[in-house]
Each structure stands twice: as structure tokens, then as C-alpha cells.
Image (cartoon, rainbow, N blue to C red; front, side, top):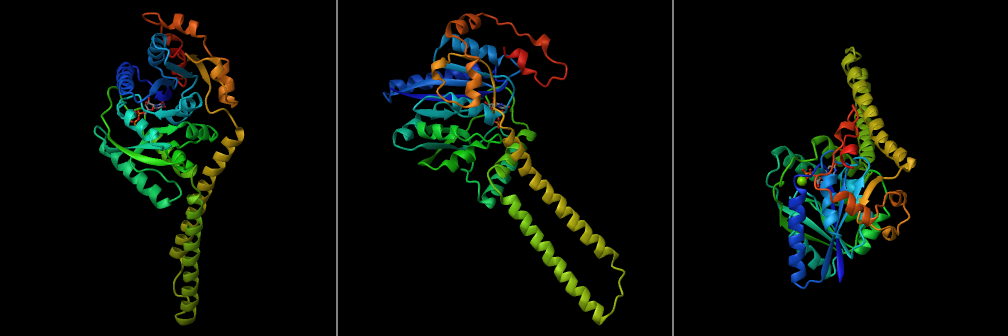
Length: 367
Ligand code: UDP
Ligand code: MG
């Protein structure tokens, strides 16, 4: 029997998780009755939520050994939460899906049939995006147009992170450890046999989007600066154009000197040139700074994430020797312990210990 590992990044998703679990279990059962030959396991990555997500997941794990849970000790963002899931996924296929039911779990069956046909990466492309704000749709369109123009970053338009990949792809992806991650671009970059599966996206089942504008803008910057050197090429172009303009202006000045003589004070043009060149120089430093910042962070070589607690993950599953997994070895909870600690009807939430500055609000609550 083949196994599919379903990675579910969760940040403050207590309201949607029970329904997500129910619907994906039903979808898995339907697939098994079909005789398609796929067993399911879920890898829920709790991205240091500050609500009761950790408790909900612990309770699910206590009742269903197929539910594996990784609690991150600090909020690291969606892309790294998915990366953590990938490190612990051992299935013959791996699915990445959001917890909020915008991506219907029923689509997974169609993805797996494409994997059975021999494809390695199945991108799920949204044909409809109901419930999104006009602003989000508009900025997304602008973003994809920009990526298309740059040309270096190949992505499937209108495909988010809902994706199914074969085991070789998941294993290859684990070797890519850059801290600034744009997973949809990275997967497309890997090659292999890729295909697109279209589906209708639903509205969020409950709760609010955990991707505010700032996080979206950060992801967009990662897409460009981590996947492409186009901005540096753009500086070259801008420098070339301003040099060209400066040269034309020099010829104009020489010609007017010999024809009409110096009859303009030159203040405006001097200020104009000064501003244009200073602007260009500052912009160039900022663009190069983006790359240097990334080199600095990569040079620090810190682990991408660190785990505070796991459920239903056995130590013999730790075959990788990357710092993240080495660190997680400390925190593996014996299955027995997981069952006893999480089968409490109403687990305690120690919110009182929350630090005043609130930077790690999730820490106390997710235990
Ligand atoms: N998410 C996460 N860490 C974060 C933000 C979001 O793990 O810091 C998860 C979130 O729980 C959800 C998925 O990433 O499962 C996508 O987030 P969301 O649905 O809020 O984004 P949107 O669909 O609005 O772009
Ligand atoms: Mg969503």
C-alpha cells in the first residue's frame, strides 16, 4: 500500500481544524473505498499559534495515529512551516494543503491519480477565488505579471501552495535550505514531470486570513530577490539610460556654447541631474543591500525552524541529518506520553504567562 503524507501548516486555525480533519478523513476513506491503493497520514505543523490550535491537534493525534503533529517553538511563517512538514514526510507522495478549507481535500484524490499516471509535480491551479478582496486579487495579478516579465522565476499562474509531489521531488526539495523561501517557484524550478490540475477554490471556512499585506509583500520580495538577479540587471539598464541621457545633455551644452553662448544659468539642469543620479545610486545600494542581507542570513546558517513538541512521530523516522531534524530529536514525545497528556477533555491554556511585549504570544498557549 502506498502512503500519501498531507502537510497542513496551521497558524491560529482552531476554528477550522476539526472540520478540516473531518472532511479530509472522509475524502481519504472515499479514496480507499475506490481501491486506489493510497493510505493517508497527516503532518500538521503548528506554526506557534497563540490560540488553542496546539490543543486541538494534540487531541486529534491522541485519537488517530495517522495524525502527526509538529509544534514549532516560534512562528516562522507559512513557507517554513511547510518546509518543516516536508522534512518529516515519508509518504510515496506528499500533498501541501492549507488548513482553512479554501483548497478542498477532495481534490487530493485527483492529484494522486495524476501521480499514479507518472507525473512528479501536480500544481493545483485556481479557476475561481471567491471571498478574496478586490485588493488581494489585483495585487496577485500585478505580482504574476511582474514575475512573467522578469522571466527568471517560473511559476504556474494562479497556483498557490496547494500541490502534490512524488517522493523523489520531496527528497530533492529537502536539500534546498535557503532561509528566504518561495516554495511555488522552487518546486517549478526543480524540473521533473509537472502538470496542472484546475480546481475551484472555496471561501475560507472560518477565521481570518493569516496573510496580511506585509506578509504578502515579503513573500513577493522573496520571489524576486531569492529566485532572480533581475533587479541587479535593472540597475545596469538604469545606469546605462541615465549615462546616455547625460551624454546627450553634454553634447547639447557644447553645441549651445558654440552657437548661442552661455545664456542659461544651468541651475535647473544641475539640480535635475543631481537628483536623478543620487536617486539612482541610492536605489542601487538598496537593491544590492537586499542581496547582501540574504547572503548574511544564509551565512549565519541558522536552522530554519525549531520544534518544541511532536505527537505520533517516532524517533526511527529521523533519517535526515539536517540541523532542524537533529534539534527535533530532543523533543520527540513518546506515543504513550502523547496519548496521556492530550486526552484531557479540556486542556489547560497557560495564557497568563504571555510576555508583555507579545512577540512570542504563541509559546505559552501552544503547549
Ligand atoms: N499559516 C502559517 N503560518 C503563518 C501564516 C499562515 O502556517 O505565519 C498557514 C495558515 O494557517 C493557513 C495557510 O498558512 O493554513 C495559508 O494562510 P491563509 O489561509 O491565512 O492565507 P490566504 O489563503 O488568506 O492567502
Ligand atoms: Mg487561506
